[in-house]
Length: 292
Image 1 (cartoon, rainbow, N blue to C red):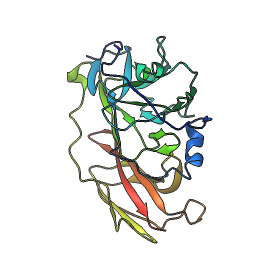
Image 2: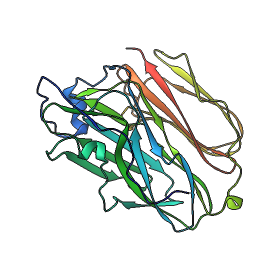
Image 3: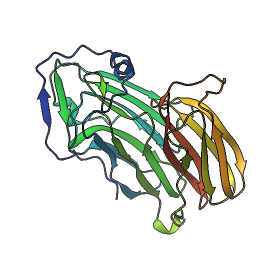
């Protein structure tokens, strides 16, 4: 069962650097400070939503924690949390405070904290930066919590850490971020359809590429399909497919341009596919490397 949030265990590692980090105006500006923040660093960070799976009653209110495992140190992050608004209602921050103890116990200074909900209520965007001079933290520990209420729609639904989730250390983006979401069953297990069957991954070839790559996927059933190319902030660069498709092969080309036909700079992008499997929404993501 998913219960009301309990503080996540784990050590709180607060590291001070010899040099003084510059005051930051938010994770949205860290990329500029780092020269596009494309430099990978050390072993990376594993972030996940907890509990990893659970069951709630119709109308139940529950918390979902964002936790990080033991890994690289950081002092700021952007989170992009996606969910299905037809099954879940976002209720805002818990009364105990959305930032986790790994962040709140790091230093005494006031942080930068930005929070936004997308117009269609399907995505939460969070930016959080420690503004204490030279302070970084490392997992394991809880960094954030969000609260939802289950709608009167029995079934299984996912909550994801999506494209645009990033971590920073003094303005440098930390590389190799691994993300894991959670699945929630609303109502009794008997009311939940079978788990979606395993399908082949979304594949891009060639990859790395220049000037174009081909995306291929085997749709398990007919239904609405949305295939988009996103940058690392989760912004839409190119809309490749937005229509209903029959079951079977899906093939699309991306030539490294945005929707207006403008060539994009070399770097890392994400192809995000939304489709239907076992009668419910499903999602696949793959990395794209555009060679300058």
